[in-house]
Image (cartoon, rainbow, N blue to C red):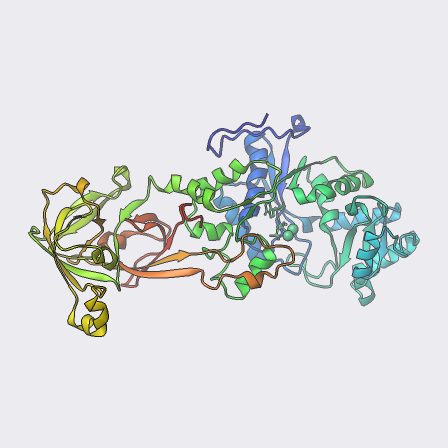
Length: 542
Ligand code: ATP
Ligand code: MG
Ligand code: MG
């Protein structure tokens, strides 16, 4: 029975009916090094790690599936190793499919020699058509000698060789299309990022996967459910080559609204400059969501709470960010920021002489530390707050006390700029007088506002809020994704923040009172504004 310990990512207990686990469990995570890991890959990696290391005392292999030299790069390999480490995943072994190019070649030769594979040069479109109509290729029954000769041409990478490929001879009449003689080897003259020019032929995923799984002692090959149809083919390959048995086990692919989890599309936005790079906070990459403020325990908890379910649901981002909030709320220090352009200068009468108090950064968690709060008669407030004040009204200055609104005024310059607005009372307020009323009850006021004394070093900060990259919830297969790219995906607000913000470091997670949670992307240095990214909390669904 499937059982799950509440919210504890490292204690979830899924009984998924893996067979043959008594003989040991070896799983593998096989990314192609052609991009940075996205949240879908994170799910595959965490599940493989879960079964190898947490559920069973087994082994996890990180295998770079580098059989397609066109898109692969060392940079991507390095990033994958780092991202796994960041997620707390420690593979017991790191391998490459390319480590087995010789064995794979030998296996293919053996297949040809035993009549289980043949060389073909049918053009792509015709091949597709023949597959649909259950028609044999005219080369299906070529002689073993001819097949071997074509394979050698391919291996030499000659022009003739590039037009040929090798197919497994399974069954062109099979109701399962994956069994209709899949391609197992292709010729590509492109240099490989590890083997250079040594090979001109590359095994396909369908061939390399069962062979290398068997060779590496993988016991359970976990794949996403769209491979269901290919399980029969995988098992056929194992038998055809007399290889060790490997169990297949499938789980649901991860999918989120307004998000594409495809390296091809992600590469396109990175290259076309729609984002700042693979680690852009709008990217659904592990690095991107981390930079947006996702914590590792929240990511683990969320992904493992999806567990090994097989039904694909289009999730919105609400739940994962709500999970994250549980982790950041208790530890995020509280600070204050006031909009730079819309600030109002305020004089507080009755204020004591300028002085600094130490207060907890987090009212409920003193362990977070303390901050300096400067009290003085010169303060600034947000225009939107001040605009709502009535003369004579009692309001609360947060963490100070109550004050009574004395007089609001619009500067002559502003009044001249917008005489109509001034007459109708809508012109911006440029100054305000408040009279401190500390004996007033803070529970009785309806307006509690943030404020900052100007008798401290105010720190310039840039606050970014991000939106989805897409305008459509679910992209369909036929949709050109470029047409659904959101034209505006970030909003920048410049603010002044309290002096304590100068001490925050890159990657710190904090909260600006009444504004939300933020991650520090760039710390304050040499007078240059610090940069903050707003962390979604699941409320707006972003
Ligand atoms: P992409 O379409 O992004 O290139 P891929 O499947 O081709 O994805 P791989 O690098 O081959 O990328 O994937 C490594 C592993 O991650 C595979 O086991 C794959 O099934 C799994 N994976 C990829 N995308 C998802 C996803 N959205 N949800 C769950 N697992 C995924
Ligand atoms: Mg792939
Ligand atoms: Mg893919």
